[in-house]
Every structure is written in C-alpha cells, then in structure tokens.
Amino acid sequence: MRIDIRDLKHSVGDHRTESFSEPVGALSLGDDEVRFPEPAQVRADLFNTGDGILADVDVKAEAELECSRCLKPFRVPLKVHYREEFRPESAAPAVAEGPKPQNPRHQRARAEEEPEEEESGEIYSTYTGDEIDLSQSVEENLFLNLPMKPLCRPDCKGLCPQCGHDLNEGPCTCEEPITDPRLAGLRELWEQRNNKH
Image 1 (spheres, rainbow, N blue to C red):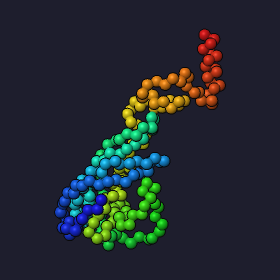
Image 2: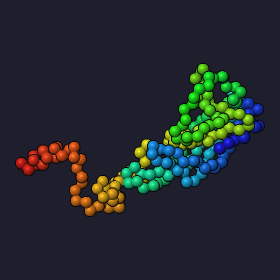
Image 3: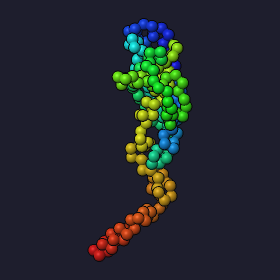
Image 4: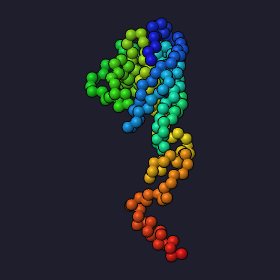
C-alpha cells in the first residue's frame, strides 16, 4: 500500500486524497488464521504538516472468521479509521541500535517504516525516498478491530458437547448432557434433596 508523495512532501500545507483497493494478507488470531477474501477499500487523506505527512485513513474490509460456538466460517465487515504520521528518516533523532521484537501477527521484517519516538513522547513512522507505506498500519488496525469472541450470530447455539451436532439446525438425539465429573457429588446431593420431597 505504497503512496507516492513526491510532490506533496515539498509543499507545506498541501492536501491530497488517495483511494485504492489492496489485498490484505492473512492475520494470526491465536491458533487461527483470519483471511480477507476481498481487497480492502482504503481512503487516505494526506496532509503536509511541515514536520512530515499526516495520513488520515479509512479502511473497509471483510474478514472471514470461524464462529467460536458452532465453528462454521462466516464473514464480518470491518470499518476502521486511524491516523498515522510519517516523517523523513533524515529528521528522526539518533537512537541506540538494539534488538527489535518481531510482531507475532506478521512474522516479517519491516525495512523502512519502523516507528520512532522522540524525547517528547511523539510516536511516528519514518520513510525514505518518495513513498510512504500504509501496509503494516492497515493490517494492525484491522487486527485490533477483530471481535475477541467471533460469533456468526448473537444467538448461536453452538455444538452439542456429546455428539457435535449443530444445535442451530435443531435439537440432537442425545438423551442427557454430560455432567462434569467434578460436580458429581453436588449432583447427588441435589437428587437426594429432591427425592425427599
């Protein structure tokens, strides 16, 4: 998701809008992989602030997830808005080199746009040449907006714990649910009390 800023970076106060479609790579969500079957729709309003380029970004995408109850795949629409500031690498303050932790979601190195932090606490990304790259920030913001517990629908009934039947399709033929063996003693007390009455 590279954007050419050749003209914009020399004109303080200038603004430009870019709209494009880009494929999004699969993201890891725990042991599962989240796929994006269709390209993401990205709109970026770019502003030359004098210090660098401010990107005001809107992303629309559709993620394919697995329901945490019935385990069936389903799609969920995502709408994301965020801002990211890019400054030329030559303007970044010198920082001590050291090992950089890898992002577990992407498992790939980021060559140009490593986030930098000034002593003032400002966080921004750096760029070299005439392009900024939104790829990592788009993927990170989509990841942050994924549901923690994906459900194909709020009232999903899930699977029968005994036979695995999808209870959304109707009741199964199991006679009695399996009781947690740790609660067996409590169940016996409950049955004894009910039998006395």
